[in-house]
Length: 272
Ligand code: NDP
Image 1 (cartoon, rainbow, N blue to C red):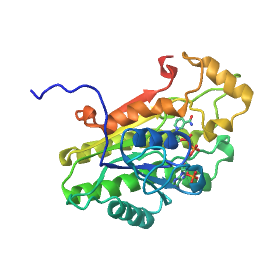
Image 2 (image 1 turned 135 degrees about the vertical axis):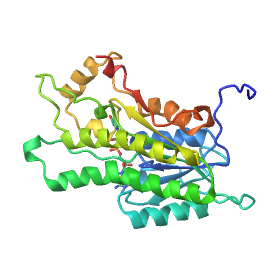
Image 3 (image 1 turned 30 degrees about the horizontal axis):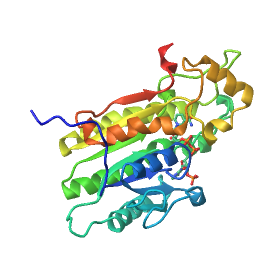
């Protein structure tokens, strides 16, 4: 039996990639990782300026490097190039292996429309990012780890929508069938990748938030937001920071026996 260790998480000297780490829940991941000593490679698509603290040395988190990369996670060529660039940019000269130890595949998009109005373009827009985009970056990072014969941990930001369809006050469903089904797909993808890569020491888990206060939920009208919050056992939407503890745990060695799981942070929504 190994010696017991107290519960603290310290990612000093490690590089962790966060897709969509420039705003919303991803930005909370970026800051929580930096606060735990990690160097963070942030991937964004359009909005670099939302990141307040990017540089060789972070002003807010001394000793930590945060660097932002523009990259569409659904573009395989760009993802491969950016992951290789991150590998070089964060390299530690005295270490012969990759500095990247973790990935949070968080970037995601949503389209809210009744099913009869949905188009193939809407389908591609959602599945390209929420499913293929997650797979694409996970595969690029896993390949690097396999080439370096090193272990790593991947956290996929899915959603409690992988399990349920939310309903509005009049009991009609919220119209997000492509979004919900893409999250069910990515939760299952988590299990498949975990199964394939377990022998390589690569763990893959899904984190599934309920309602979180970000741009995604700010788009709901206030009456709907208040109604949804009122339905939750904890009676409110989450702050982005409330998603970070479980993500950091899954990335850390404290979770060394956890893979292929889906962990809900939903204010009790799935109780009923
Ligand atoms: P936001 O809408 O606030 O942010 C979305 C993020 O994804 C942005 O950083 C955006 O980058 C990035 N992104 C979108 N498309 C791409 C792409 N093709 N390539 C790279 N990056 C991209 O989202 P949230 O913070 O609300 O959500 C984050 C994740 O959590 C998503 O997967 C979402 O589905 C999931 N989730 C959110 C919930 C919520 O209530 N908010 C509930 C359950 C799950 P840019 O800013 O540059 O466009």
